[in-house]
Length: 107
Image (cartoon, rainbow, N blue to C red):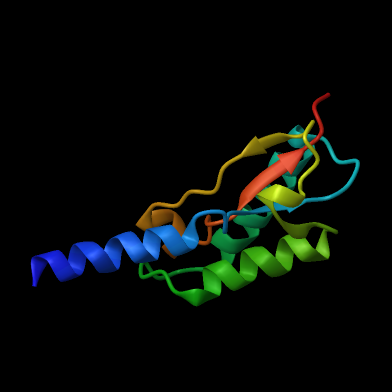
């Protein structure tokens, strides 16, 4: 039973390798991307009153960043010269809508 769980865990982790996505807008500095993401997080916190996270947080963040002109881009599609902040791949990051990274130009 335990070895089956280990195999399943390895398979899930392996399937997610390379799946990291980043909010990216061409010509935007990394600092501006951080500021825009913080604005979305602030707006999210105004709307969430419960302590149990759900899909709403993730959907809100994606919609908010999309409205600001950001696209979700896989790491292999990002330009080589941009600065990146990796997504929070922990359970907390996943639950609270932080499963996407940020990328932007270096000032």
